[in-house]
Image 1: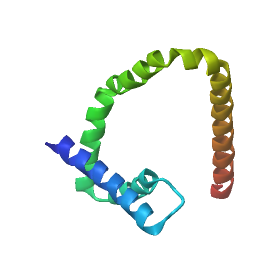
Image 2 (image 1 turned 135 degrees about the vertical axis):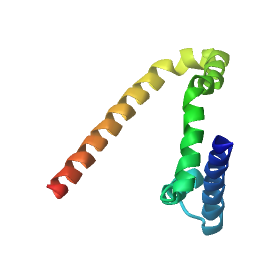
Image 3 (image 1 turned 120 degrees about the horizontal axis):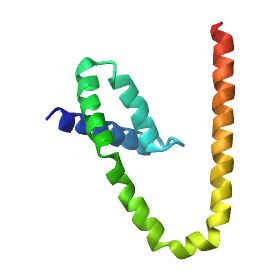
Image 4 (image 1 turned 90 degrees about the vertical axis):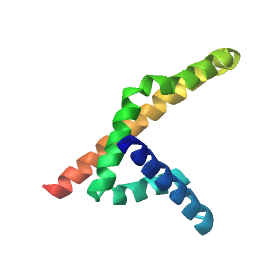
Length: 114
């Protein structure tokens, strides 16, 4: 029951974020704003406990969430052979850029803290 309550909190935060973005015309995705709303809501123990229970359930069954992706890859194998090398290059470069930006932000934050 606790996990269902946590899932309801997660869906409520995402829906609220989506509604606020559409009403305000903000230039960011609704789930991102919902994530920020959830960050604020996690200050309350009841929300934190139920969302934690939902997270435990989702993490326990994480491998099931990759089944649709695997089916999609197998369905579009032709596209993968056609664009696979370019996709791999983009994935590798974007991963390295993300890691570099994360390292630079961490370094800057550690300097301001010291």
